[in-house]
Length: 390
Image (cartoon, rainbow, N blue to C red; front, side, top):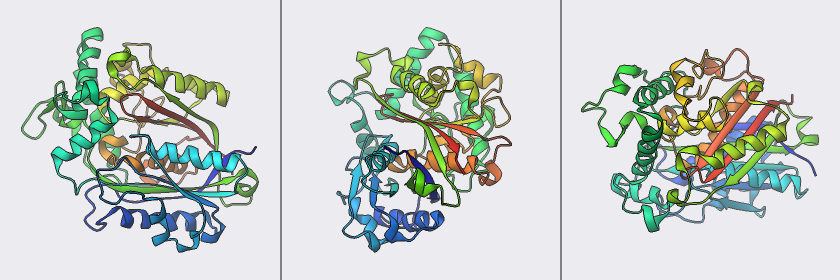
C-alpha cells in the first residue's frame, strides 16, 4: 500500500457566478487547471473523483462524467461521484486516496463543485434540510440554520450567553476573507456590526444572525493526487500525515449535540495517526458553516476544555497572529460554502499555506496544517493533517 500526496490544485472564485451558468462550467474552470498546475499531461490521470451535493441544486444529476466535457483525455477511465452532505469534497478526496492506496492507479483527479445561487432561497433551505434527520427535524423553523440555532441555544443554556464570542468569530473570518482573492465576501465587517442586530444583520434563527451563517455560493476547486513514488518526481508534494473519517448518529436528539463527539473522535484519531498533538499544528482550516460550529470545534480539537471555546477567540488565540490561526482563508463564513467544493477548497488552501504560495493569506510559519470538514450537524467528520513533502 502507498499513501497519496497532493501535487497540484486549482480554485475558482466563490460567490454568485453569473459567468458560470451551470455545474458543468464550474467543473471545467478547475479540472484542467489543476492538472496543468501538477505539471502532468491529462492522459496521465488514472481516475477522477467528483464531489457534488445531493440532487436539488441542479437538474443535471449523475455529474461524474461532466469532467470529460473539459478534459476529454479522461474518456474510458473510471470517474465516480461522491456525496456526504457538506463533507462531500473530503469524501471525494478519501475515495481518491483509497484508489491510489489499493494500487489501482498512480494519479487521481478530485473535483468538488456546486451551483447554488440559481436556486430560489426557500428551495435552498429545503435542499439543505436533506442533511438533517427529516423525521424529527423537518419542521424546525429556519431550516438548517434553525438546526444550528437550536445547537447555539443549547450551548448558551449550558455554558452561558456566547454572543460576543460568535460575533468575534464572524468578525475574524470576515477580516481574514479580505486577503482571499477567491472569497465571496471580501469586507471587514468589524465586531460591532457582527454583534448588533440590525436591518442589514437580522436574526436568521435565534440566537444566530446573518453574520453567523455561511453564504450560499457557486464555486469549484480541484486537486491532483499521486502515489508517493510519483510525487517524489513532481515540483511540489503535500503529504497526508493523517486522514480520518468518523460518522455519528444523524438525529440531533440522539446525541449530546453541543459536544460534537464525532468531531472530537476524528481529531483524537488524527493526532494519534499523525503522531502529534494539537500544539504541533501551525494552522487549522475548520468548518464554520455557522459561528457556533467553529466555537464548538475549538473544544472538539482540544484547543480549550468543554464550555470554554469562547476563550480561544476572545483572547485572540485563533486570529491570524494568534497561537493557532483558524480559518486564515476567511472560512466558509467569508469565503462561501458551495457544498461540494468546500472540502476540496479547504485542502487546496492548506496546501498553499504549506508551500508558501498563499499570497496575502500566507502565515509566517506554516509547517503542519489541520483541516476539519463536517457533513450535517457533526455527522460526517473528516480530519486531515497535512505537511509539505517536497
